[in-house]
Length: 378
Picture 1 (cartoon, rainbow, N blue to C red):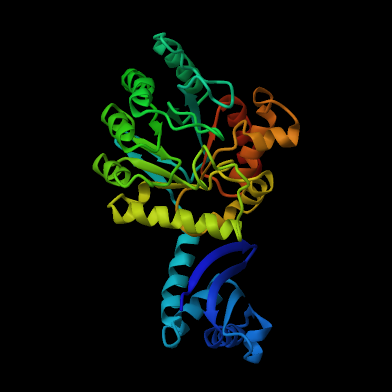
Picture 2 (picture 1 turned 30 degrees about the vertical axis):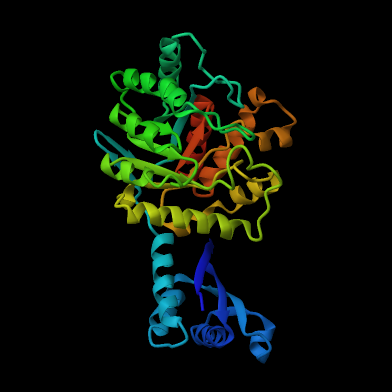
């Protein structure tokens, strides 16, 4: 029997906890225990009549009731002791606060306000039209000037990527990716005072970037490269683990999910646990649901609407909607004309729980988030 506490969300003072594939015996015990606490549990009708052997279950109660349930389940058979442990952990993760990233000389307080990561594409073929790479031309000074502009607009960190991961993009050779990003990071590390992130899923690119001054690895593959986690741990860096269905070359070919949020959560939970098992400090793990990476327009909108549910992972949440094609579908606008869509989606993401937004248009998003913060503090 597998008991998986897969989803938790807060609606005012009420929590909903979805449990997958319980035995009908365990589900009926849960229902009785919840009723005794003044709460409730929804299970399949067949489980009540004995016609079904398995059922999903939805627990409905406040945090105090769920904690008391967890205590009572410690004395129950049928796998409910394990559920007690999972429930306690989920409650603790959901209510976790005080996120800070300590990265050498950098100390980012992600609780006080949302942070902005500025996007720097050292590519010739970025989907957003902002690729800064010029083949055969040494234009590092141009790239540095662009990055200093983002910092002047108060980007909290800079994310440098040398390989396009737009839908349909082919894998870039390691040598070429290194040539695009490492000289820029070397030059940057001596000039700027904000954290540098390397946007790569290749362990060797991450290693050389960290060796030259980067302190965050933004891995769109969620640590699929088995060497990546060890490198992040060795350099005491932070890591962003993102959900992606398939690869950039294939991810938008009719992406299907049986249960979108459950599947993305399970993927990110697995990536987080791989990071922890590799010895990466939990305070340095960030999760990203991967807007646009193997998702349809409807999938992206559902994730943004339900972003608060990702708090169940107990990690800072990063979201990147900037100029993406789902905004183009809504606005009927090319990438360069999606600034207002980026601002709107970034504000909603922060309101729904994002700690970091990754954007091209730093100044515009910064202004919008400043207004949101003032409203929330009023």
